Amino acid sequence: MGPYGPLGIGGPQPPLSGLSVASLVLSLLVCLAPLGLVLGIVALVRIPGNGKRGKGLAVAGTAVGGAVVVLTALLLVAGGARFDAWTEEGGGLFGSRDTKAGTLIHLKAGDCFAPAGGLFSPQGVEHERMTDTSVEIVPCDRPHPAQVFGTFRLKGDHAISDPAAIYAQAFEGCVPLLHDFAPDTWALPDVGFSSYYPESVSGTGGDRTVWCWLGAEAGLPEDSLRQDPGAWDAGQRAYVKAMRPSSEAWFSASGKVGTDLAAATAWAERMAEGGAESAKLLRAIDGLPARARGPVTALANRLDALSGIHRSASRAPTRAEFEKRWDINGDEDASGEEWEARLALGLPVEDEEEDGGEQG
Image (cartoon, rainbow, N blue to C red; front, top):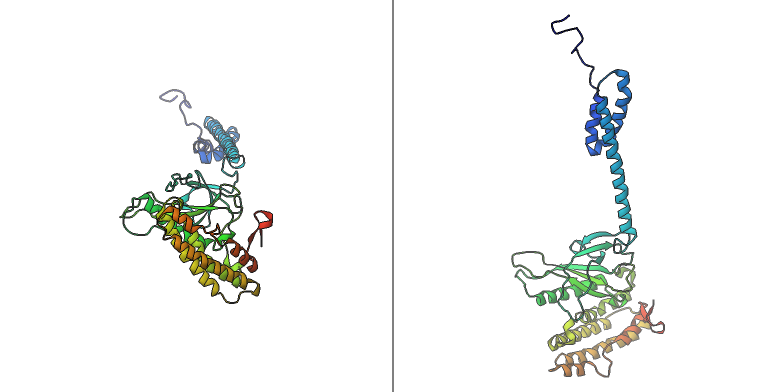
């Protein structure tokens, strides 16, 4: 007998199974729970044969690891179902997996999108700016309400707090960018253009970027509106380039033209200058097909005549006099001559016999 009783009482215990310890530890680490589950099962199989301790730890590791694996699987299934429902059943604006959420300020020229709010200002509200920049980015080969055609920075290093001044600069800056993006504006579908601009501009810095876009509230485009002048022949390119001054002048009309005499007369002056410049450029085109020379000359003559009318209107002393000078015999544009010239050059025109269809 030993000093403390029979030999063997309180003697050495069997070693602890390392697998059982690893099983429990790994099972508590969510990302490694599957490995903890496997090690726990292996430990339970081996412990009866090797006589080691740790069966309770192995049972706990197996239980915890199994529970984590099952719970993770359920969460993945539920999350996938919710994502599918969002993308396929109208959770997104277009129900497409190809769309993604974003903000307008991250878009660049050519990007297509659907805004969280409206595309354009409410009727009669000139300086209403977009307040929610959240958008859904949409592939341009799918129906899309809008496409960015350019961005630029407001000019000047001074502070600008007048919304009307910022709006005017944003509007005027977008017009040439539109003609860079889609030089042949006649061929555009029924879209309007608008912009997003800062509410005010600090003199010490801050974001001065303006985003310009084309948008449609119905008959959504299903392709990019960007045009490639390389697809046109030399005569077509020269014609579109010559018509740019007149087109830019037309698009420069702000919402005030219909009510404010100063805005109307300023626009009439731009129309006079743009029309005269386009007429000059049309006459300077060399190498036109014989069939197009007559119609192009007729268009140049018409633009010159309209330039005189518009210049007279730009000097009108009253609104009533402006309306009288602008609309002479109800024939205030060159659409007929332009239609004939485009047809002769092989550019797309609206088919008058089919009420708005196009022929190339």
